[in-house]
Image (cartoon, rainbow, N blue to C red; front, side, top):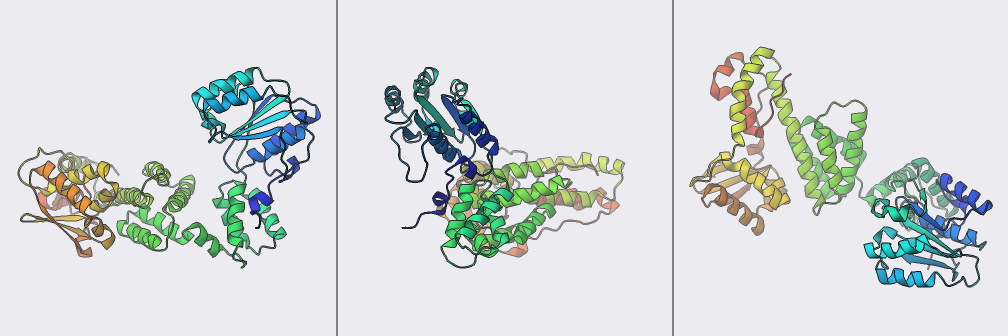
Length: 475
């Protein structure tokens, strides 16, 4: 059985460690001057060399040769994730007083040390305070903030950093050359970018792609990682900026059909929007969207969560654009006078109404908002529905079958019926249909000065009816 590449090319000396020269030089100088500490703490993200440096250091202090087959009784590796209880640490405390079998030092490497329980930390602290002269501890963690200060203060701390793209690309290219892997520069750049500065992840992806024994191009990397084309991300970004809800939905649907990973889409989109912000994009809505995009990978339903946050941002931009268009020809004094009258009907849309015995479409926004906390996927669909009341039947029109199907699920239909009854006091039959013509909002592009005198032709009222309550901004 062949050896995986990340193990085959694991660093076995300080000279082979990539991108952590600030640590390897310090440790080499300490070894030369024989200034060996009794406890070290290696912190940093996964896959950047913490365990490799720990193993190299353990062999160097004992003047032992290090290879993949190296097994020494005086170098003990402990996984704190599976040995986190106080019993294991008490056993360790008893064993540390036993002299090394043949080496000068007995070295304990405790990986993911932040996983230890509070009681186990207290037991370990006692050992770190009064360690035997022949014992060295090397603690490694990806989450330093979870370690007690009392532990950290008794160690020499070394912070590992993520590698730069150029360092990862260079190392991957070296491995590809040795393994005779035909891979394009663009493909290497993609692997480096989506390894996110961790060498192990990038090498593992290269290993996976090389199994086909075919030349590796950019397209193969995109397919393996579930990455959307750059053009699709640009299109999605523009749709959100321009407030094009239909374009956002269509682009997301296309990505869904291609099997694109929504978490990756969120990360790529956030990166692109951030770059635009650095370039001077004036977007007060951007921070809130970036915050939501960060939460997409951790969501139980990443695809639905991504859809919701993008639709909210697009809807806000749509409403803001329509409002600015409707008021651009008015003077400051006229706008202020109109704001005073327009604010009332806009805020009235979201004003809670006491439950009665009749269903009123004005209650629809309140009903939809109640689903947000109880069923996020249902909320994402209902936000895009056009409600119409016909006798005792509530008809919901959708632009896409994907969202209409969510209401065909019994659990979602029952929940919506329950919320309608709780809000209005009546039971309604719910019918769902797909009809794109019902979802085409008509937003006024210019304003007739005389229209302000006619309540039924007020453009701000029209905007309110289409998009719900909104803040009125001065131009």
